[in-house]
Length: 93
Image 1 (tube, one colour):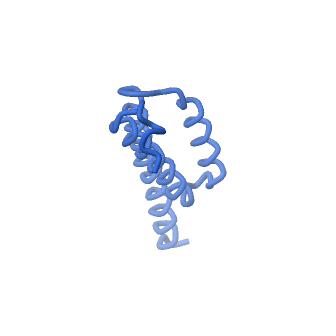
Image 2: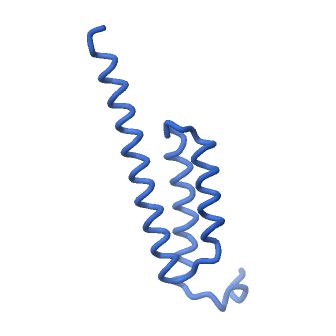
């Protein structure tokens, strides 16, 4: 289809861009359960992605890894909140 449109980009760059899109999708999915709310998560993610829009190569790989780490941190916060809610439910008033 567009074989020549991106001939100046390498396969690794293309694969990194796919990883970036997947990371954004994952942030949005996880953000739906985040205590601060999806709008907060989406706005923060958009700001970070815009701030790093110019990043390429090793720096982009580093940014993707940091994003994945942040997703894990978000999941930790979500799990902690759920645990606290369950614990509160079973504690005697």
